[in-house]
Image 1 (tube, rainbow, N blue to C red):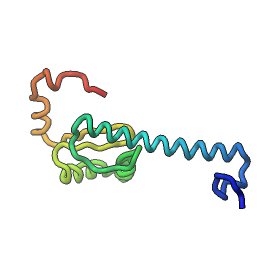
Image 2 (cartoon, rainbow, N blue to C red):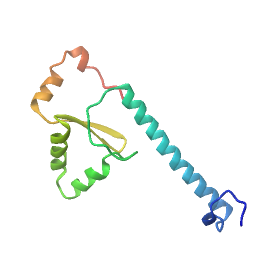
Image 3 (cartoon, rainbow, N blue to C red):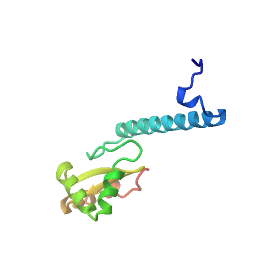
Image 4 (cartoon, helix red, strand yellow):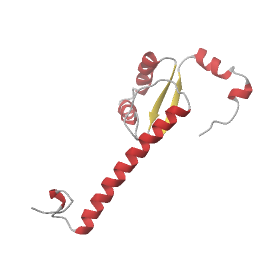
Length: 123
C-alpha cells in the first residue's frame, strides 16, 4: 500500500500530470467557493426581485439555452413571470438580468424621481 497522499487512481500518472490534476481540482474548488461567497455578499448588499434558482457559476444558462434551441425562450420567460411576478431576476452566466413583464411595472420604474432612477447603474 502506498503512503502517498494522492488517490490510488493518480498513482499511475507521471508527477507532472499529478500536479496538473491537483491544480485543476484546486482551481475548480476555488472558483466555486468564490462564486458562492460573491453570491452571498451580493444578496446581502442589495435586495433584488425573486427569480428561479440556478446552478453556481452558470445560473439559469442551461434552462435558457434549452428553450432558445427550440425557439421557446419567450414561453420560459412567460412561465417565470407567472411564478415570480411582474419583475423577476434571472442569472445567465455571470450576468443577472432583471425582467420587467408589464407596462404598469415599467411605468412605475420610470416614473420615479430622476434623482433615484436617472443615475448610472452601479456594477
